[in-house]
Amino acid sequence: MNFFKKNAANLITLIRIFGAIALIVLEPLSLPFFIVYGVCGLSDAFDGLVARKLGVSSSFGSALDSLSDLLFYGVMAARLFPTFQRLLTPLQWTIIGVPTALHFIAYIICAIKFNRFSAIHTYANKALGLFVYAFPFFFIGEIPMLWGVYMIVGGIVAIYSGLEMNLIHIIAKRYDTRNKSIFLIRRNETKELEEEK
Image 1 (cartoon, rainbow, N blue to C red):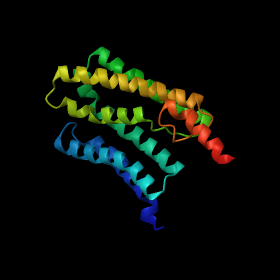
Image 2: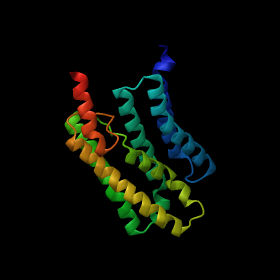
Image 3: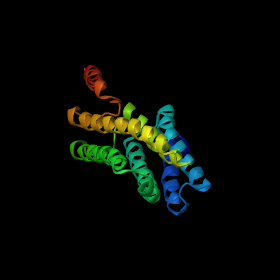
Image 4: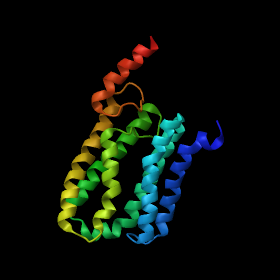
């Protein structure tokens, strides 16, 4: 297997890391900002898909993906904070803060229990990623009613996702990326035991 095929997914993930660094210097909510932001979003959507299709999934790739997500969303939050501060209410800040704390706790539990700096990409976590990714687009035109609906639905998804990841890390006997939902843990562990026999 040649270098590019073997590392294709990781190279796509690196695009998100370099894109996040570029977002630091770009004017928030400007056309160049949204272009780089869009490329980062595509990177996030395709790196895992490419890894699975080429059969090159790895622990390193999973950790790199999690690191790039943290960097990308951290830079996004820092760059858009002045706009957020001006437009969001204390309740909306709470809707953002609680799930953020839950997700950081999930990273800590995973690091302590499984010696991995990673997050399981559950279905709810993927839905949350889409909500978080779409967030800056809802600031175009500054329509408060639209933010309210977006924040409520996104908040519910975010809290569920954070709680689910924590429960998966607490309940699961081993780190398993196949745990796409709290409801699939036992089934995956049963399959694994059957495969070992």
